[in-house]
Image 1 (cartoon, rainbow, N blue to C red):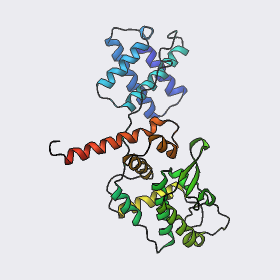
Image 2 (spheres, rainbow, N blue to C red):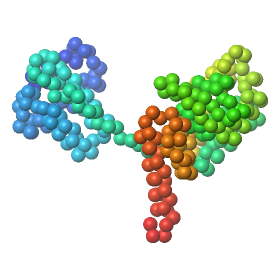
Image 3 (cartoon, helix red, strand yellow):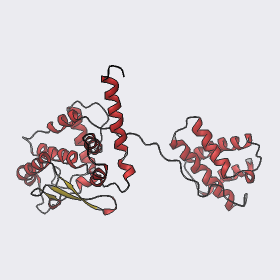
Image 4 (spheres, rainbow, N blue to C red):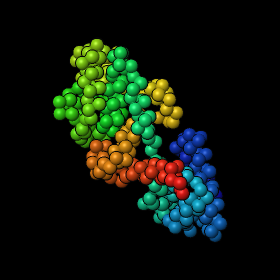
Length: 295
C-alpha cells in the first residue's frame, strides 16, 4: 500500500507539478484513508471497495467533520483510485459514480422590515447619486433580483407605466417581475432628476450608471450597500444578496405562495426557494420563545 501511495505522490509532484498546498492535502487525506482501511484488515488497495470509501466518509461525518472536508477527502480518494487503475495497481476503480456529499444548507441572513426601512431612507435625495442609490435599493427589495441582474438592466427593461420589469437571469432565462409603488416612484424620480446629469455618453443604455456615466458594476454596488448598511446601524453581515433574501422571506412571512416566490426569484428548482420557508419557521420559533409565557 505504501508503494502505491508513494507512486501517486511522485506523480502529482513531478508529472502534474501541483502546488504545495494541494500535494499536502492529498498526502494528509490519503494517509488518513490508508490508516482507516488498514484498521479494517486490508493490506492491499485491491482489497478495498466502494463500501470502504463509504464507511470512511461515514466515519468522518461521525467525527463531526464538515461537508467541505468530506468533499475534499472524496476528491483526493477519487484522484488516487483513478491513478491506481490507470497504472494497473488495481483492476477496477471503486470510486466511480460515488455521489459527492451534499453541502450543508445554511440559512440565509435576512434583514428585519425595520432594518430595511432604515437602509432605504439613508441615501440623500438631494444628490444625484443618492437618488440613484435609493432607486437601486428600492428595486432590489421590491423584486428580489440578483445584483448581477440589477446592473445589467437597461432603461427599456423597466416599464413604469405597467409597473413591472423584465430581466434575464441564469441561463439567459427571461422573467417578468411586478414593481411596487415605492420602487416605481424611486426609479421615476431617478430617471427624471438624476440619470441624465450623470451620463457622459448619451448612448449608454444602462439603467444605473456610475460617476463616470458608465454602467455600474457589481463591485461598485457592493461598496454602496456596505456604506449605507454602516450608516443605518446594521451590524450584521450584509451583502448585495441580503435584500434578495429579505424580499423572499418577507413575502413568505406575509402569506405569499411559494410557487409565486420561486417564479419571481427565477429559481429553476422549488427546493432552492424552500430554504426561505425554513428561515420563516426559525423566525417564528424565535418570536415564540421570546414572547410566550410558558415557552
